[in-house]
Amino acid sequence: MIGSFAAATAVTVLDSDRPAGDAEGSEVRFAGEVHPGWDIGGNANGGYLMAIAGRAMAEATGRPPVTLTAHFLRPAATGPCVVDVSIVRTGRRFATATASLSMGGREIIHLLGTFGRQTPGGPSWIREQPVELPPYDECELPPEASDGPRPAMMDRLAVRIRPGDEGFRTGNPTGEAEIRGWFAFAHPDGAGVPAPDPIDAIGLLLVADAFPPPIFNTEIPIAWVPTVELTVHIRGVPAVGPLRCAFRSRFIHGGLVDEEGEIWDSAGTLVAQCRQLALAPRLG
Amino acid sequence: MIGSFAAATAVTVLDSDRPAGDAEGSEVRFAGEVHPGWDIGGNANGGYLMAIAGRAMAEATGRPPVTLTAHFLRPAATGPCVVDVSIVRTGRRFATATASLSMGGREIIHLLGTFGRQTPGGPSWIREQPVELPPYDECELPPEASDGPRPAMMDRLAVRIRPGDEGFRTGNPTGEAEIRGWFAFAHPDGAGVPAPDPIDAIGLLLVADAFPPPIFNTEIPIAWVPTVELTVHIRGVPAVGPLRCAFRSRFIHGGLVDEEGEIWDSAGTLVAQCRQLALAPRLG
Image 1 (spheres, each protein chain N blue to C red):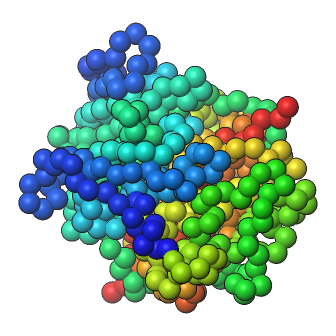
Image 2 (tube, rainbow over the protein chains, first blue to last red):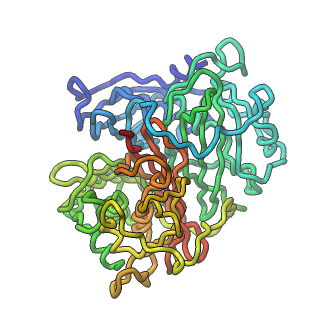
Image 3 (cartoon, each protein chain N blue to C red):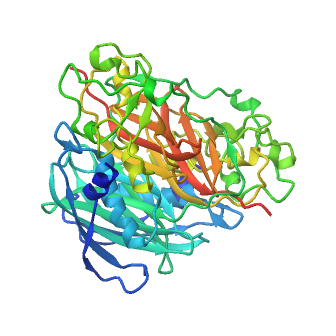
């Protein structure tokens, strides 16, 4: 179902003042569509919206994302969208661009990113090993919630959660603000089986926001956790196979919560790291 | 010397199409100056540039920063600068804006941020305790380097480094990509003594980039580590006193290095967390 994700994030050029090449200062307008089935309780997933805009920015700059930040302005339902990309700077290695994804004339997310190809090699120093996880088949399908259906988006994915990490759905939070699991897109032939194709940089933008908020494993009441800002650093090109993921919150106070994560491929390479700032649920 | 920092990051409105209030879509142009003495080897410090632009964005939105991302396009020397702020969205709690800091018609950094007041209270869950550090007076003044003078910026600060963490300057790296220390602005009356005033959100933008790169404590050669992207989340209003800081790199590969940090105030409150993506030095 990677084909489905590609289709659900497809964009086409509507209008461009860009000369041949990718000149600084040029503007490109893309048309896209926020498709049904990529939402959490009726609001389009933030990583999914970022993937649509990120794809437009990648097409405008001719390069995949290296680091992309989105600020979330309003929730989005489904329907046609427009992505306006402005190219800020192009260099040999990197291009920097801003973008704005709008629906019905209202801006939904605003983005700033730097784009360029991964360049494996060079000095390497890795502080942490890949996320520890039981094998894919020993992890769990996200359960139906006691308080409502599983998010629609989960039917398009073949995510598996570390046993116990979704206990909060049945009233058994772990007490640690962490969620680990495997990410894959669902195979087109059967629900719940991983698709065979590797996941690209645009797909990684979705992965960064595809798991439940780790805050659900604390005693803080479960409620919508609206993202204010999400930054994703792409650190490698994933090999084929499900991705090992770990997401955690470290500091919940003053009405805000952080959430950071690492995404590793099947070969043990860190392929993305992400961090977001979100509104914490209010008590009472 | 907080007065000096305030003066060195001051901005004045040049031109504004903003009506009364802070209407969406309005643009405000500020004039500022990149002052001497806030550089590392002739290149203006990234956090310092972010503070100039962040101050302009805060004035345009009427609120301090909550989360601010800067992408670094070119190194900057000293001289006059212009900051163009565009207000993307204003809401009750938050305002989102983009900005561009230019010198001589060339854009130096491009920013995207969300601004709003801190709202202490609400649910709290803290995974980590404040950074452990020896007392301020038992930490060390950043040493003169064997390979050149101490960065000019250090004379404006009263930073103290955990003993051993700057051993790399004399050929004794710790082997761990981490640097801890205390941050303070220097007292106007005497070099090296902390100024008495509390540090504000604009000052925290500088703190986020004021320590040497933790990568210097690995075996990777010491060289300029140009920032590609820096995101700072402001998480509180600092109490009076030096700030406890810890910065570390976790993943150095593919020519890029991350650097993340936490900044705590003297009362033990997390007041900022930051993360950047930078170019790793190339071997040979």
